[in-house]
Amino acid sequence: MAYRKLGRDNKHRRSMLATLTKQVIMNESITTTETRAKEVRKFVDKMITYGKNGDLVSRRKALAFLHNYKAVVDKVFNDLAKRYENRNGGYTQILKTAERHGDNSLMAILRLVEEAKPEEEKKATKKSSKKEEK
Picture 1 (cartoon, rainbow, N blue to C red):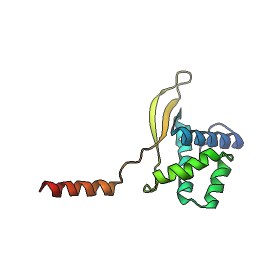
Picture 2 (cartoon, rainbow, N blue to C red):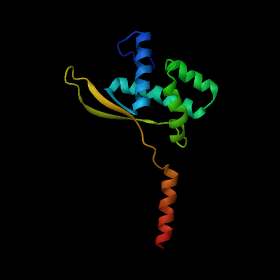
Picture 3 (cartoon, rainbow, N blue to C red):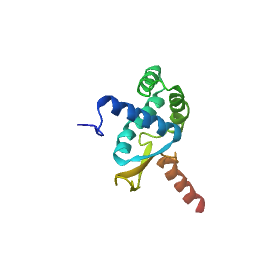
Picture 4 (cartoon, helix red, strand yellow):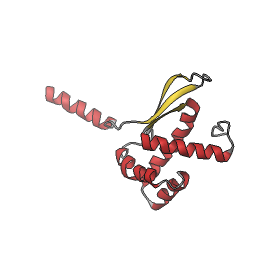
């Protein structure tokens, strides 16, 4: 299978993943189990890609997945799409943390990456700084 079932039936899993996706987009960081974080990462990246497309079909697909929660979709299409316009994927980062006290499940922080300079710009600034030294 290409996805994790997470011990839930189809409707509960889809609803849980949509809710976790909403929380990541709104708060830009959540703490959850490692397996859930790995599964939610796919959907967050897909929503941001929809935002970068910016057309009506993409907006409707995002609204359908996120249960018509317009505030989240507006943030994706207006803020996050502009933030990641020069980045081709990899919008999220998973940081592993300690085990949960009750059942020892592995916990992780799923967060949106901060947009840094693209590597091409970094290389260009290094080359220009070397030329200035000479």
